[in-house]
Amino acid sequence: MRLTKQTNYAVRMLMYCAANDGHLSRIPEIARAYGVSELFLFKILQPLNKAGLVQTVRGRNGGVKLGRAADKITLFDVVRVTEDSFAMAECFEDDGAIECPLVDSCGLNSALRKALNAFFDVLADYTIDDLVKARPQINFLLGLDPVDMMKVVAPAA
Image (tube, rainbow, N blue to C red):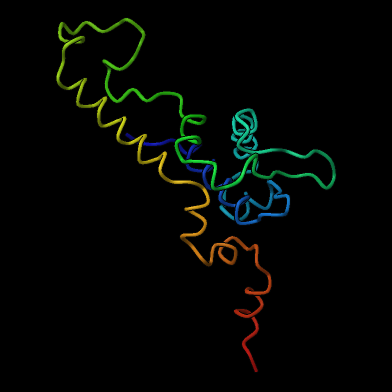
C-alpha cells in the first residue's frame, strides 16, 4: 500500500501548524517550507477543514490552525480523510465486478484485511503531536524559529 501525496502533505501541513502553535499559519509559508505549490495545499485544506482537523481564518491576517489539539489528531484521522480507497486487491473493491469464485472465502482476502486493520491500528497510535515532538529542531527546520536561525547565521563572537 502506498499513501498519496495528498496524505503526505496533509500530515506535513498539520505538523507545521502544530509546530507553529499559537499562531496562524499561512499557506504560502507552508508551501515554501516544504517546496510544494500553494494550489496543491489549498486543495488539501478543504477536506481537512471539513473534517475539523484544521480551522481557517479568512481575511488579510488570516491563515490556518489546527482544529483540535495536536495530541488529539491521529495519523488514522488524516488518512481516513485524505485517501480515496484502501482496496489492497481487486477483491476489496465494492463495484461488484469480481469474477473470482473464492471472493467470499479466500484466504488472501482475509490476510489482507487483517494486515490493513493492523496498519490502521498503528496509525491510530500516533498523533501529530508525537511527530512534532520527535523532532526537537522542527521549528528551525521549518523556518519558524528566527532566534535559532540567527544563532546559525551569525556565529557568536
